[in-house]
Amino acid sequence: MDLTPIWLTLKLAAITTVILLIIGLPLAYWLSKGRSIAKIILEAIITMPLVLPPSVLGFYLLMAFSPKHGIGEWLHNTFDIQLVFSFKGLVLASIIYSMPFMIGPLKSALQQLPMSLSQASYTLGKSEKETFIKVLLPNIRASVLTAAILTFAHTLGEFGVVLMIGGNIPGVTRVASIAVYDSVENMDYSSANAYSLILFCITFIMVISVFVFNKYKAKSPLE
Amino acid sequence: MISIDIEKKLKAYKGEQVLKIAAQFDKGSITKIYGPSGAGKSTLLKIIAGLVEPERGKISVDDGVWLDTALKTCLSPQKRKVGFVFQNYALFPNMTVQQHLEYVSDDAQWINRLLTIGKLETFTSHKPEYLSGGQQQRLAILRAMAIRPKLMLMDEPFSALDPKMKSELIPGLKSIWYELGTTVLIVSHNPQELEGLTAREMYVESQ
Image 1 (cartoon, each protein chain N blue to C red):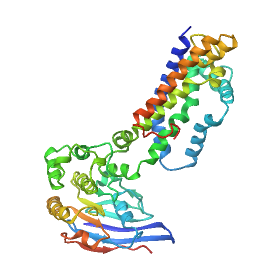
Image 2 (cartoon, rainbow over the protein chains, first blue to last red):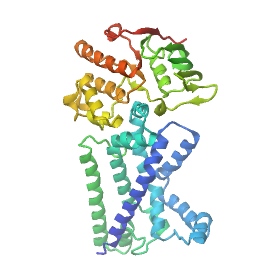
Image 3 (spheres, chains in turn cyan, orange):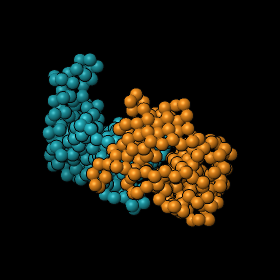
Image 4 (tube, one colour):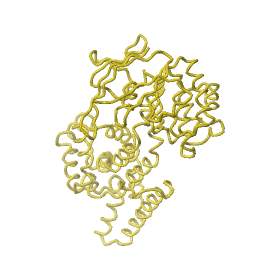
């Protein structure tokens, strides 16, 4: 059995999770503070991948990333970057597709912290940044881990978006979920079973680890 | 000298009310603020600390202006640096007693002195969840004192302390306030809560 799709999937999930952690923490913090029209619109856009069929999202991303249209054309002409049918394109699509799984738990955790925690830190002369790093972040540690694991696990299972953006190029965009589909198409059920079992085990271990880390106090991973 | 003249709309069960306060507090004085629930006592402390902005008003401390809505001047809470004791303590769950004080000050001698006054020397490695209500409240007071404040704002600061502990704590606090020339405003419901403190009284009621 060719293990390349598994490694490619793990690499894609790891890169997506790290990038989303870097983007997600400040974004979730900003969204957690008060309401405004801009925040409502941005939050709706971030949430869209949860409700949109992956093929619809994939289609629009395919159009956007295409070297013949808009942003894709500009990236291609200016920086010689081609996102369609490339690993870079998969990463970008995964970031968009998995963003609600990172932002949701982080924003919810930050909103549940009493406002007096940051207020107390401000009265002690601490800046907003220092308060976030030393007071807020350590107190949402469990939610950060939950968000990271959910994002990772969700990226492992991507299919529709990945297929639309990346296609099925071995070693480049042929991730595990595509390999399962491809194996079934070719009546190679033993390979399909092997890929599926590996994905199932990895995901199961990750979900279990969330509960263990949270000392059995963890709520549903979607909370 | 602290001079306050503010106006703030408050949302209340029976409709909108307005908190109007005009008062002056001498340097080093202790003032007890009392009044009915929902009158805006806690809001007043938050306005002074810069955590809530009033619709109209001016706050000046000695020669400096902290707030002047006419001039659109509003100093951040970080620059006002008042000692603030929150009614819910607002302790940081991730920090031990020692870390709470080290977050504010790196003066080990000062921290040890505060720990002694608050009788928390033997609990330095405890996080808030492992402290009793009274210990948590003392830690909240010590943390606010750690910045050596010129102005101390305390919201029901002794409500969880038994009379013996309170009578032991207050002389220590008073001696530090005297040394620093700290002006103290204390919100309190309970007339007995401030026994041992010679305090001027101020009644607050929204209209």
